[in-house]
Length: 376
Image (cartoon, rainbow, N blue to C red; front, side, top):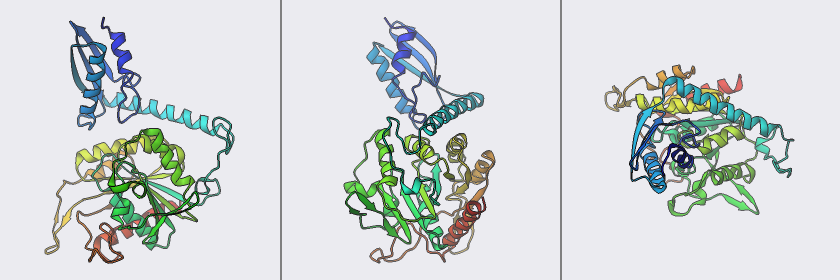
C-alpha cells in the first residue's frame, strides 16, 4: 500500500542534477498527497527556468510508478530567497566539513593511509596561480574567454597553461586550432604548446568527437590525472575552463584548488546573469575569491558605421557584478576573428590577433587580472 514514507524512500534515490544530492535530504519534496493510486506532490527548484525540470519530472515519475503509483502529478515551485540562502549555507558548511576532514590527514597521506604523491603544480612550494573560468549556463562563450585570456597572458610574457576541464563539452583544442596530440613518454604526458600556452584537454583522448558518458567519480579522476600525469614544467598561471553550472567537476576543482580564484562569464541577458549568480555564489560559499565578471557578446559593432547594437540587452554583467560585490572587468563584443587561411599553420577559429579591437580588449583584461593577482 502506498504511503508518504514509501514515497519519500523512493525519492531518496533521485538526485537534484545541479546540487548532486537527493531531493529528500535537500527538502525539495513538498505537499505529498496519495489517493486511489494517484500521487501528487510539489518539487521545489532554484529558479523557474531550471534546465533540468523535465529530467527531474521523468525521474520522479519513473521511480513512483515503479513503486506502484498508477498516476503521478508533479507540480513545480521555486524556493524563496530565504530558503535558497539557507540551502546554500548548509551546502557551504558540509563542504567545509569535508575540507577540514581532508586537511586533518597527514600531508601526502591518503584516506587509507597510503602515501599519495602531490603533483609539483599543487605542492606548497608551487608558484603557479590558478584561475577557474566559470559560467552559470552553457553557450555564453566561457571557453572563448578562457583561450583568449590565456593567449593574452602569454603575450604579456607569462608562462601559461590551460586545462580544458569542461570534460563533457571540451572545445579548447578546436578553438585554438590544435591539430596534434600530446606527446606521451612512459606514463608522462606532455601538453601541446600553442601560441605560447600549454594545453591539455579531454578532447585529446576521445576519438571522432565521441560523447563522454561518465559519472562524477570518473570525471574527478581524469581531472586529477591532468595534474598528476602531465608534465607542465614551470607555470605562472594555470587557467581551468570549467563546465557550466555547479556540478561535480566544479566542486572537485574547488576542493582540489582552495587557492584558486574565479572569473565568471555571462552575457548581458538578464536570465544568463541570473543563472551565473549561482556559480558565483558557489565560489563565495567555498571561500574562493571572485576576480570579477566578463560580459561576453555585450554588443555588436557595425564595421561600416561603428554603431553598437545591444543584441542581447544591456546591464546583465553590471548587475551580476554588483550582486556578487565584485566588478565588471571587460565587455567583449559579439563577433568572430578573421584569421585568414584555415590551411595556415597559425590559423585558429577563436583566437583574436593582438592588434584587433577585440584582441586589445582581451589584452586589457589580462593586464587588469595581472594587477589583481600580483598585487594581492
